[in-house]
Image: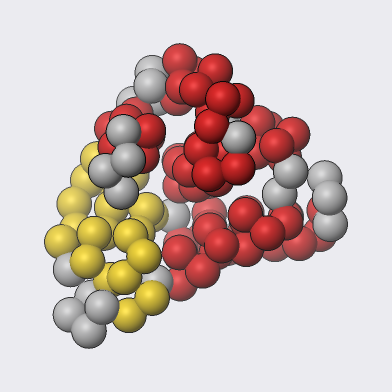
Length: 116
């Protein structure tokens, strides 16, 4: 892992938050802490890191790893979609001020179609 301690710290932060959040959340539309974690993941993680993280035990980490892979290597992300589309783990999502339960597969589908 490039800058391994940094990737590890970001992954720990994403896992501790344990939800998927859009860029802005809440009534005031503040930048979400989880989105900031995602930005850090983009900065520190390599393709190889992200491939490993798609299989991480935490569903939020898997979603953000897939999102990051879509951003930096869409072809590689497409090849990993078959794995993540079968992921039925539950994850809390927050889009703006609308929260709810979803699955990793559902969030990944939205990301892959450009919805989020």
